[in-house]
Amino acid sequence: MKLTIDNERLRSLIPGIIHEVRGEASLYDKLSPWLESEYLWLESRFFDGYDPGEDIADLAERIIAHRAFARAIPSLDVTLSPAGFAVIDTEGRSPASKERVERLIKSLNDFVDENLVLLSNALLDDADWRKTMISRWWLSTCIPSLGDVAKYVANSGQSLMDVYHSCRNVAELFESDLGYRYIGDRLLANVHKATSPELSPTYYPLWERVHAATCRIVSDYMEHGRLFSPRDVWREASDLVRFIKASPDLALEWEAEMGEDFKVEPFVNNRKGGFFF
Image 1 (cartoon, rainbow, N blue to C red):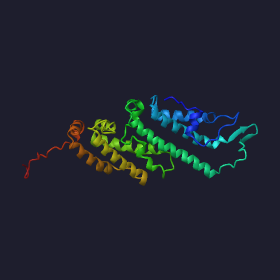
Image 2: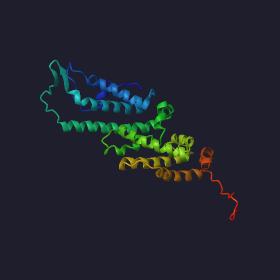
Image 3: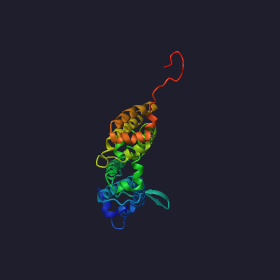
Image 4: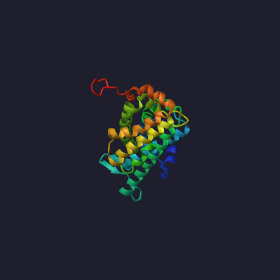
């Protein structure tokens, strides 16, 4: 992804900034180190060389600009002089209180989180993005959207991405156990890619059910601090296996991988005695 933000574009993304006077560094110059850092952050987590279309690029620039501004705020009015650090003169304006600055930073971070959800959903709908290497990471669980975990941010004290990683760790453990013991790793890998009925009418109904099961497991952990037990996995798996067996195409694939593990041998009494039959 190419970063195309200039000073004019930056001002359109962050309104309410007083224009520079002659000789003063532009807003872009002031934020340049943070802009570059946030660009690399977004690139490594979502794009990894992928060149997005106009709509996705617009979301990306909004995220980069607001993340950069939020992180730059604490040091924008501080300068290093020969005598040490000093606060830049406010030209008669009253300095903002700590509380107002904190509210501004929070509102910027909230805006970033809202747009990260939009970005993740837009990428999931992008056929070209789904072919990239980075998409494999996002599509390797049944909670590929940041929107699946956004509701946990408010009470966590963490950023959306930190919350997502916590939820994802639980989802990976649960789905790994689910695939290994009950569904089958190959079938689950196909299900992970079927995030809409248009992509796969065969696997999507199962994706919906695995997604719901994973969200329940994640919710227990995030809201009650309770990590799932083997009994929890079986409770979720039993309904999924019944659904698979009732779906002819899924049942064939499941039988090929997991049939032997679920095969029940009929009882035969080979022991001779008074009750031999």
